[in-house]
Image (cartoon, rainbow, N blue to C red; front, side):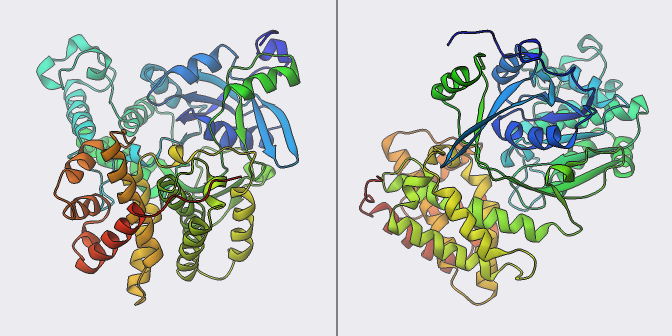
Length: 493
């Protein structure tokens, strides 16, 4: 690639908007979704986003060199379109917690948005904060010690090493988890007197606003009762349903953008033309007019959450595990396999029976999903979708299975999704292939059990109640065995 680097100067972009939104989870989805909506809802440039990465600083370093600008490639069967997004005005390393606290404590900041992934909330199968998780336990210990020492702003030399987990470095000063750092940031806002603020979860889990509240309040309660009371009175937790397929960017997109614009962009994002955002909750300090860009605000978001989690995300998970077992690598390839498509359709039928009929347009939504999944120019890798299955299936498969059992039906299709996950885990272990999951140690312990006994351990991670159901265990076991023994599917064209 040649040519000048994309920046506000080389692109002749308007001056950066003032920071009024702080975002945790600077990844491709946020840049294709919330950043796009904010740009299209903010013609006067009043709502700048300061975004923080999660586990790695790479995206922040790359975007900071480009003044936060990047190219969004909308990829349709008919061709590509290009748009430079300018709504991100700061790209920060997630390890820079001091800057996070400074921004959240600022009176001009009105809301914090989250795309930290399902697993980062650290909720157990019962929906409560998993205090036994090592990262959560470390944060609880640190937050309590910080409170005893005078709050999260004291210098490390004002604390005793015995008061916190002694693993050295900044982890002794700042929480490890995203929600723990958010608690520290909210405490900074409380102390600054900046007033109310909204937390907007944009992650793919049911009742994501309530999940964010549970995680934040669970950690805050361990730190300071006064902080917990302040959060109750001053922080709203907004639930959302987000929808836009965003596959990984490859080197080919870097070359494509350079050829199209004459500018070097090291951080383009590829996405589909379709987008959807449904929100429910209060914004006590204001918000962008996202409805100008097509967002929808509703009183009851649960049906919209479940439509998306079950029909889109559930289908993705089923295709990710069953498709890889049958030799496929992308969503489009798995959908072209008649067996995978039939299994997906059967799951959709079950999910549809457990969704309200009015107002959701489910037949049209299913038809649109088929077109989106079939978009061969969106290379959406199954391995990417398969990550963190222990968190995702809890939201995507088990609610449908429970609803089917309650209605007196078998839940065969939902059980098949769980069975495909288990067969995938077994196959990966047999091949010596690492599985990316926040519960890797627990998965490995369950898979090390004798054949057949591993089912109970794996189901326990997802739903203890159904794990104790002998009929469910037997059905999942049989389906997992069938998928393990299945002949690979036909090669995709």
